Length: 316
Image 1 (cartoon, rainbow, N blue to C red):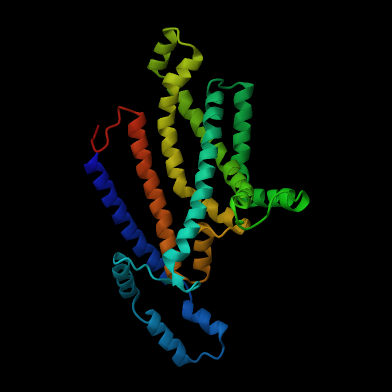
Image 2 (cartoon, rainbow, N blue to C red):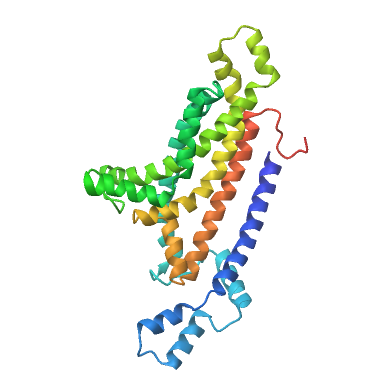
């Protein structure tokens, strides 16, 4: 296990290194730079002032030279400053990362808590009215655009009824919880259908296996068959999807955070890219990549824990 974990961590570091080079290059190729934004905001800035600023920020050097300078500083623990906030990047991103992780983590837990029983309920009654009803609800959730659902909830619960706040994060535990309700509802409703469909398919596959037929032949009740045998088998592939979805929820968080004006990771990355805040955008995207890689590692570990046939670090 130790050798496997060391290998996976090394692979993650290599991926992050390659990702940093790709993202740095793509951001550097974007039209305009921070100095151009300063010039547009200050018409009195002269050409000499702009040249000095470009030299100060290193924008007059080749892109590969700038990347190597950034990488050397990053390896030493200095990830640079955010131009927009005039603060170190980590001071800006870490509080926002915590807010996004809270939103994504709760959305994932609630979605899983709904999807597991709903998927198994449908799998036990394939092609029945209950199965068709669950599938219909799943397809409806998958098909709804997150931004449209967010607008609908804002109009209904914030504008017409006035029950919930439409934007921000709030102060204090109660207000933070109230501000979480609608963003959380958007993420859950748009993701739970996908998870339920996957649980249903995985459970149907497990129920067709020989050890399930043997358990039924021994006289076990259907409830015991599901709880003792089918549940563990269906959880293994489902856990993989849930863990990999954790990093993918950053994209959903971007739309949701923008609609509800939440200062989270997704909105911060979007604002940094639009504002040519290179360091903030780069580190934010690397954190999103790291979340996906950690989710993949946790999925593999969970799969091995649930399925004793899986041996990590071996070819069998």
